[in-house]
Length: 439
Image (tube, rainbow, N blue to C red; front, side, top):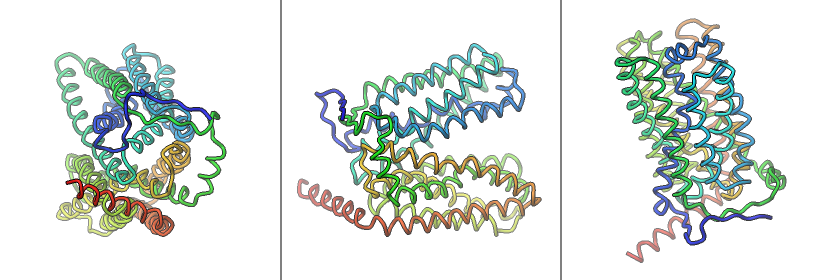
């Protein structure tokens, strides 16, 4: 059994209040590290022109990143339990940023492919699971809902601000200099921010004393114990069912234009509306979870998502109904991000210690997020098989069925974790009572 620890002089306290700076850094890092792998999608035509790519090659870059990411989700969990989160986050952010600078050399296609593949490693394998572990470690047992709610909501705000600022810079430079200058400026901004965040986390994150359960990369006894826990599989199914909405909601945009006769601008606005609703849903979910429990918030989120999806399916496709459609969209957006913020918050209710977070997420993330591989294929099949509104409605029906499955799994989770949740609630009430006495 080996151990590693951080700076001895610093006393580590597991609470959001004592780690607010770290939380802000983790929120920004959790948003910004994905800017480089994904920005090409938002500046598609310019990226294709600058690097001389075909549409097929452009798609292959996404496949390179996504393919490595699926494998990385699994292996990354074991990395998070094997090495300190601070070091993994530092390496991930810095290497991601350095690879961004390589894009300024206008490398050939094979190099672009390799860069995107490595990003699948640096932004997932060495980053995501370590990030989840770091978030769990800076919040107390009774603050898990709040920390993940703040994280997801904060990521939404970060994306809103950075995308608006970068888009403005791109527009000005493209008009006054060239499209390439605008694109390269975006790359420089994202790369510098990632590297800076890496160093800030390295020096400012007060990590708890690191305890390694085993020197082996895969801690087999812990893995066996986690695999035998029914809550592990329930958690994976819950993530799969709720994340299906998160990776499919953008089909609402073509649905509004094709079925409701909305203009392209209105359709796009309804899509962007999700990012404005995101912080609201996440913040409310996070603070509510610390009062009533993360899984109860998750239960409510599934119910609201089902209501929202049924609304999309059954409201008449008329221009006059776009306002009502927007209401159902708001319900879907707020509840799907609320559910997303609870994906890992409920781990505390399953009695999974922070020390084995990596092993647990090594199972949860590849299984849960694998829906991203299937959802687009199912959507495409539905839209090709049934024309017009019918195709979208069938696909939304499939998503609704997944939500119902997720709802029943959440109910099973509530029954299975009753004792642990009661203990958390007792600790919460005791802490409130002690705080009242001191005041």
